[in-house]
Image (cartoon, rainbow, N blue to C red; front, side, top):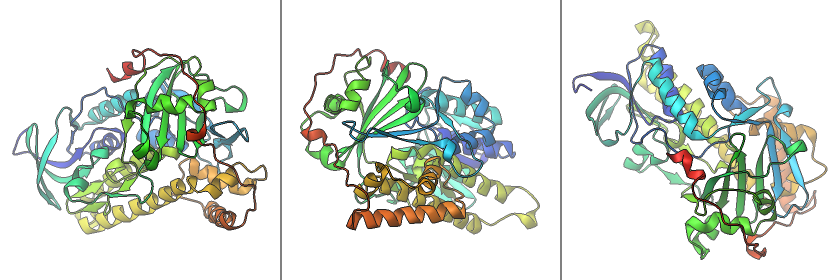
Length: 444
């Protein structure tokens, strides 16, 4: 790259959010450079997609490419306690209010990220992988200068899509962790996990324990992503090496033991910590933050990729509006920064409330109540489907009513109290040994 060249926009990170922003801007005729410090293909979690994610892919014109990759159909969410008490509760996307998509899919991110990065190149963006940003030397509206592994880069604008690296937020000390959701995830991929038939077929499975929760995400015909999200208190006090904690938790949880009776995968697990933060403000002189570089939420409702793609659309369109059209109609930098910050804050606040509600014991009581109100349930499912950027009035009213009902339940039981399943009090059962070759194939 030439030191004299000035790009219209520099995007940091070639993941789905950064690539989506690059696709939007390149198709609009802007000169875009994408830098990513990693190599492709690469392993990532965040494999459970929402119906709103599917619509975002369709609008970008990459949905057919997604569906040509290995994937698994997803029609809803199955929620159970770790010991099967109260059975499984099902929430199907077909019950979403409105005319949005009624189902979606899951996919290993190694396939998705590669496809999105290549699509950005096909759209006309210049993409440099294995190229880290080393320092930001200037960050002003219309004047951005950074040092990278490939030399000095100049651009008029920058979109930070660097994920949990949070490049700009760390430099500016903007990252703020949630007061109680600093959880840790232990996870891996396995073959031959038993999948439910009947109502639970093609559902994302969420298993609740007092110390955290498990995910079971079918990725394709044979492979399943298994993860345990532990509360910070357990992570700090458990006398088990972090790389052994997934199997430790599975051995003590009847639902997981049953479904993994024939599973093949690694003995050791991967670890990601420091869940749930935001990097407010989400825009500033010369830059916009999107995806995990703006905020990272506990992944219980799989909102991360949806927020990343929607934020990419917003930031890309802000940059496009400042460059295209008659000069008299182009918007100002201040207008676009304010617009992006307000939009991101509104959507992030909604997503945070949804995640915080999951950890409320009163919500758990209502979740497993046999007397759930169908209208409130459908409103909840609408948010589960990722429809949080434009909430219909009726859905908003019902969600407010659901929050009010949780507040009442916390003080006066209108539904039976649900005794939590406690992993620490459950007797372990020795799990069969597994091989280490299968799950790490995705990382190569």
